[in-house]
Length: 110
Length: 112
Image 1 (tube, rainbow over the protein chains, first blue to last red):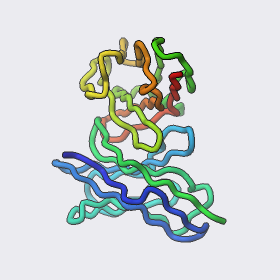
Image 2: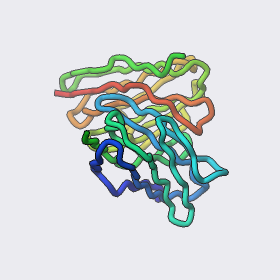
Image 3: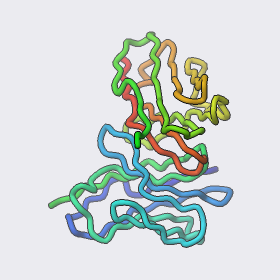
Image 4: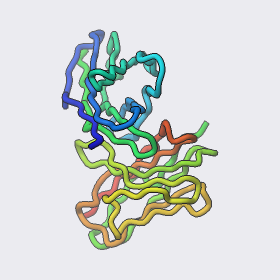
């Protein structure tokens, strides 16, 4: 079955600290992978995507993600978190019909 | 550059009433998607269109739900005889290729 798992429901970091959000997927074909961010009461904004090629992909707002086929993972990273990064983050896989994880809520302390 | 727009942003309705939501995709995006998101969950796929053709419908889309995209531009999602379980955020997205989707702000439905 196709699925996305985000093991961390809630993460708290201090401003300026590094961040890694985990994502594991199960997908039968070549995965097309995405990270989205959602602020409260808002829609989703695409942070970055992986289709093929270089396994380290750069996105907007200083985020990057690394695709590891052997671990079926696509973890999101940021070297230094800003207070404005506080939001809900969703990992997704698929084409047309996207399958989303349950999200990780990021809280940033000053 | 205008993004995906959705109307209304919020809708409160009584159980048993019909509601209709509208989505305007990014201009020239031929694919349009509907998702539903309940509290604390990720979005769940409902249906999608390529131009005016509805290509896939989720099992979540019961007989009370219908979606249209009559001219291949905007789309409507109608829910008939609403139930409290329909309370959710309804998200629309569009894509030029099917490989990356751009989401609108959503319509939050509350059924009382």
